[in-house]
Image 1 (cartoon, rainbow, N blue to C red):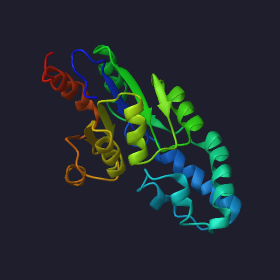
Image 2: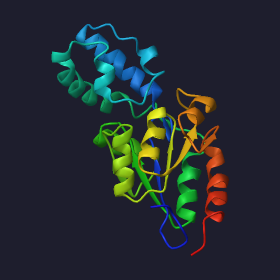
Image 3: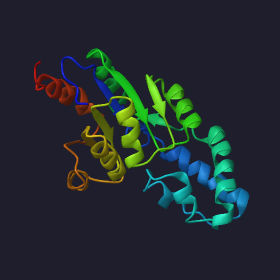
Length: 212
């Protein structure tokens, strides 16, 4: 349902490369996983294509019968290696504050393993009213609908698909693997260079809402 003056505002955000630059921690985790398992993993390549589920990425480096066990180990290593080097992307705190300034709710909907996503938010000092993990593309759209989100902000083409699936306004940020042209071609309603432009965009978006 679109936000109107009579409907509370709920804004969804992706996590990796939207709110947080998780590349250094993810790279460190993959390097540790490669050293431990003896598998060849190009960690520099991996961090250029963040977004799809972990299992999808691991299938590039491990046989199918090992993927789930390796994913479980990755998630353990992640807790030791990934939080310290992760930083909030420019404008992340201000974007969340802007939603709250309009009496809105913040929902983080991510493909990341939910317990680790929660720890990331805590480490970065970012507060979400709700968090849903382990989702991708259209399944993000299901969660957006369940939480009544009228806007979804993300860096990946899969995030745009999720927003479209929920009939939410798709706000792309060009801080991940895709530029503005790709995000617009995928159906983004607007693309920002990063989240520093989000408060101004949100204020204009809400001012243009229909009355009554």
